[in-house]
Length: 450
Image 1 (cartoon, rainbow, N blue to C red):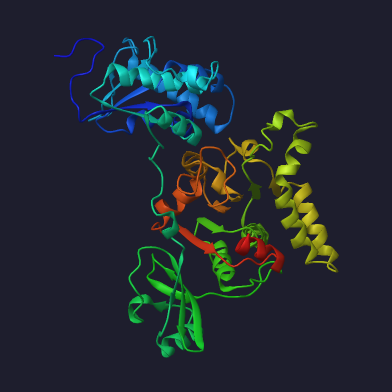
Image 2: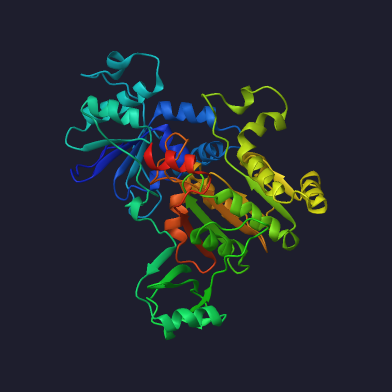
């Protein structure tokens, strides 16, 4: 039997040491290492104490983790190894780091930095359990590199990450040498049974381009009904699709049976513009249109340090949305009635444009909700947004998974990639990846060559 506060000898079990970035990404991280043991440096608790107040997602994660540890420990000392409650899980403890170290991270990298104290905590565990595989887990690449330089194993937090992101579901397939008779039938009939035309089996709502020499048809496969229907290339709110991918996106945005849509693509592919135009086209079907994006601080300056009131602080972050709305309004030059109507929608807050933090807590009932730059959200944030949806609400996520501005997220671990991979087979969901830039030839040059 193991002594109190000690681990039983089992060389196959690992000890994972988590840093603050992992906890702020997923408060339940300690329960995701199967039978292995998990340790938290005392400095992580100190940092979480600074994050516990506020309405941001990281504040929620900090509070949730603190409550989780309190519930796990109950009357026990968390400086001793404590069994985790989840079935088949290992043990948990907080590292106090009171041991003398052969290699001291603070002497190597400098004193006074929390990261270096976390490294020392992991090094002390490695010295205490020389026969065990001790691994530092962090979302911070620099911290992982520092750990490896000290011969300490380090890795990223893998839970929720998407493998083979280059093969991520694109929502569309091109089929060559398709029957010309069927291509003609698609154009003449509103619906066709997918089983009657030899369409490849699919478990998701999906778009197809059917081709045979010069003939082609663009269709949408409805997985619930097992039917296909032609995709229109007509303009929506005077915004005409410039390529078939944009037509696919508009089709998904206008379909009342699809409640969740994601649009992924490079800058200039028209993601936000199409979502806004589709929202305005359906404005009578929804109580309100919300357009939002996560605020990513510029030059390491938090929004609280910017001068002015809330609107003047957030307007620079919301500028791309206002630009798209202004572009839509310009399509109605000469139509004063519609131009005034768009202004009225804004002044009466039928269209509300605000940062995501300002919208948290609102009831999303009969709302057309557009979340721009969704690649800067964590998987938990995406889940939280969707879980708030009430009756008759439609949620749109747009973004570019290769253009991430948030620390500790990448193309594999961001919320948009997570959504695309995990929701692709749901009947209420549709996705399309836009590849062709339509902003301008100059913008395309930047995407293709630079």
